[in-house]
Amino acid sequence: MRIDVLTLFPEMFESPLAYSILKRAQDEKIVKIVLSNIRDFAEGKYNKVDDKPYGGGPGMVMMPGPVFECFEHVQAQSAEAGKAILLSPQGERLNQQIVRRLSSQKRLILIAGRYEGFDERIRIGLDAEQISIGDYVLSGGELAAMVLIDAVVRLLEGALGDADSALDESFTDGLLEYPQYTRPEVFCQMKVPDVLLSGDHAKIAEWRKKQSLERTKKKPAGLT
Ligand code: ADE
Image 1: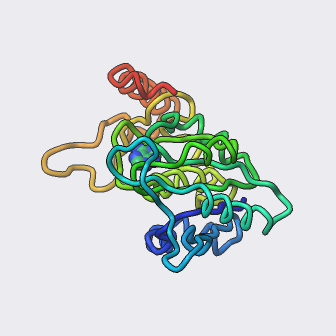
Image 2: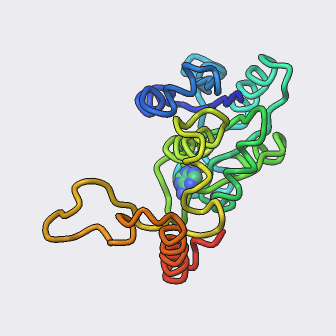
């Protein structure tokens, strides 16, 4: 998979992409992540990327020109056309179902905005899907893009060390994950449930399913 990110702050992505699963997935060519600076495509002496909103109002709006130029530039870098995704609080709220759909694509082009938002013609002209990572407002789309990248890349074949661990976890079957325990057997007077020490695999599976169902009942929004 190839993921392009169009942003005014490519440096923000360096650290999250340099560790653990995201690093390994890039090293092993499971994913190629290409960062592009929208400002490099701005015109004029000051490389202006934002301007005042028509009709007045507070804040600044991302201009369509630099975003379009940047998008066309990266789109042309690969024969595989990428789908444009705008990170925005106005988008559809990200969930595991959307993550799965995106992880099946060959290419994504994420656009992270700053300021009060994007000129509407960016969304229309690029036929962009809008995605939000939650009902709150961030200072920009970069952190949202990183969340999306992390969730998508870990589903790519080979990205996780243990091939099974993406299958057996929260949300994959619509249920939240059961409680997990590791050593020591007793910690601060809290003991690992006996069933997990029993070696009876059928009983363990039954206990885990019951725990998953109970957790999901308590947090119905987890059913996605
Ligand atoms: N940009 C600002 N807030 C955002 C959010 N909640 N999700 C995605 N992009 C954003």
